[in-house]
Image 1: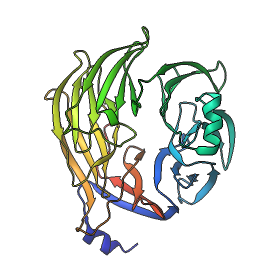
Image 2: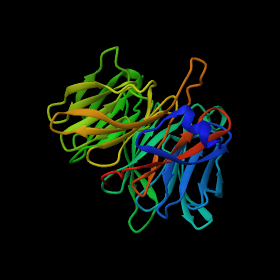
Image 3: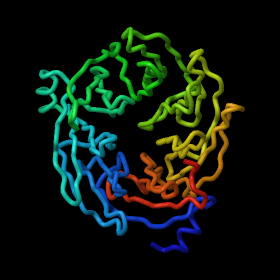
Image 4: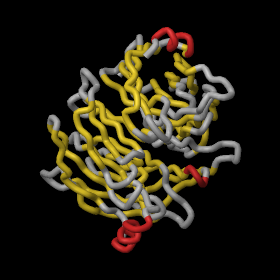
Length: 344
């Protein structure tokens, strides 16, 4: 890495580059997460999960899946869960340099499972670990499936499901209080409130045509008991949960579309954009406003490609790992350090 070339081609405020790990995946990187022992894991459309040494960042474990990986994260037990561009999820227990597949979950019906073996058009978009340890799974074009954590076990069993309306696909879920959920429908430009006690929709908010929900895997961020943020492509909407109404629509354009967004504390957001841009924002609870604290972004010309910061992981409150030059082949990882630690 030519460090002089880096300073000449980037805008640097609160972020300081530590390292670039080039060409770790042969295709687009979909997710990055941090294991309980501090190691980083990355997943990709090249069907691989890579786990890196936390000091040298050399690859220690390679997990080969049969399908593209849409999403990956770990649960409270430290189990790594991969969501596939197929009809299943895999659960892995990681110990040292070894891994063990402890369970495969297939939320689709047996008929769709069989069809998916030959056609592969189905996908598991994401899973969300709930406060009670159960998980909710976003099953594309099928249902929102709930799996219960087995007693004294790291495995899950099917519990219940909520069927989507025809031609509607859930793209994110946020757990509120007392079995209440907010559901995001990116392609239909709306959100719905689900009362799981009654198993019915209790409210719907449709967005105007000029607002599009972000492609981020995290589209809904609960800031406190009453404020919910909805990530758009170039805007963030602040929503009053109690009254189910929009408070404010704030533009947060950093020369690219929002491609990932995370809430790391009560008021700090880290947002990734198309174009290798990353922004650190502060949410003002009293004023219901969002302000930019600092950002880093590769200076672009008209011919520059729009690489996607699709996922973000934080280590020790001030190290940020994101995909870099994230493209269809030879995607890399970059590590930044925040000069000022996040207030976590």
